[in-house]
Length: 568
Image (cartoon, rainbow, N blue to C red; front, side, top):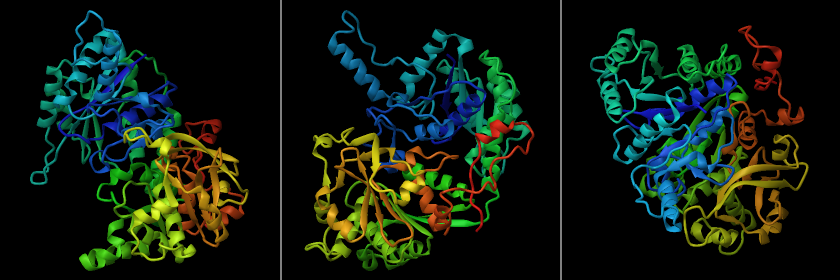
């Protein structure tokens, strides 16, 4: 077992997750078995109760773990399935220690509250020097001696600022960060420098001299047009060779599959000419990380149809009639974004605020036959909008009815998943959805399968006693759970693409295998869905991965092909 620890300095949010994922991708491409662990130094047991504005989205795993969004990067880059044990928090460790102490596992001993036990290699969140991270830094200081030097390696990610006033790349923050890390007992083996532009040779030599590392141990990770280029950037600077020597792994040859797949993917993203715009209607739109997996799923699908994605963020509250009186400019700007988009997406969310605006967007998409995808709350609100404006049920016929009352009628809570505690009490993790009809558009997009397994995160559901009324008017519940009690997928008759899913398909989307619901939205938004369905959901071989470098065999390339659509 080899362990690679990724730490950060100077500022948080510097890109440790992408760098850790990229390193893992390179090593996996060399034939090694790779996993990843994220360590977060907060007292929370998990990320389930976080505000999206503070930490970004909550990523959900197969086993129902609610974890940091970095685990989404690990899964997408490494194409693996992780578990809740891959995300450690201070709260989770302390809870385990306290439970063991109460059971008597430490009888006769004084429990040290500051040094948690740490296993496996990992990425340490935050920055070196944060008081909440200190127990983990000390744990790793001890851990490196336990597993021996040839089995432990430290990558330190640091910022190289470049003030616009001088244009000079500054190394002092990195020098101070490395000095502080060494003072805590950890010596970086690789210093990965995050910078806006490529690192100058003189700057690289200066970092090498004052941080006591060889020049080959200073790696430049400058801003690139696509995150798919980061693994290539690291590999080009000899990272594989360094790990082979430093960790005594005897890796032979270059990771050819990685070079073929990631280079083709990054080049493809750069040469896209056609655009496709999607209006993302939500209430966390001021912070893009709140919808990180949603954006990635859209990007994967746009890349698959050879279009450049343009996401128009629309605050759902700005679409509500009350905003016309409060701030007419914001109101009209929001509606201009919505109306000019090629497709509309209403993602998941919690709380009543902004739901009226989301239903306004759904109403417009339904009436104007604009491609629409509703995810989780987005699906539930599509049902509510249909009940209000098509079924015209008493008490729900005007837009003045409070959204909470509307949802209380048609979307009900699941008592068995709401026992009074907020954390970890929802319907979480991978669940099976059974398709009830063979002519479902979404079923065809999934490859005409009888069922799919997708990840869930919700505590409310569509009222199953009312589905007959909806289906009589053309809103069909084409997917249900195994017991047939919970509605999972809706589709609307006589519409180019009006789909809602109770689950979160974005969590399982991959760069080479986009999520079918999102893929369908992009196809419909680009006007390609009818042709795609007529061809039996087959894609033309144009722009698929090919052996342009002469390095990969035919069998290797066949595993890496990303399908694309023809122009007809």
